Length: 165
Image (cartoon, rainbow, N blue to C red; front, side):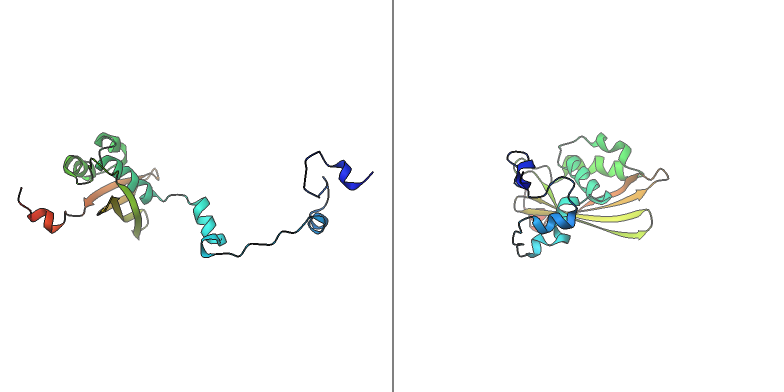
């Protein structure tokens, strides 16, 4: 009986069940390793496949959903503290992110930790050709949940603000 006759039909792997890894590696056929480009380095692949969004990235998406009109303002009730909810109530109906055409998306998002439990975050929001800025502050409560404490949107461009109505 040959080695290959114990393999299940259609199996191409030369290793046999119970074969030590060292021996299996020497009997398996070798394939050439592809050259690595910057996008396929282990670090880049780890970022692509195992990226867990940070709290400020999650909040940027949540805030955008409210400010673009995809979600109602009260959706953020348990996720805001202090004046942030009132700021959202004021911003949401008149924000330039409520577009009728292109759906706005978070393009970039970053944050700064001035002290433990606080994140000062920023995001750039793209809707077609337009890019707007959004800044917000997150504070971590005793229950370890992050809540939005303040929200600001970048002002409208000067040409739009000065244009006659």
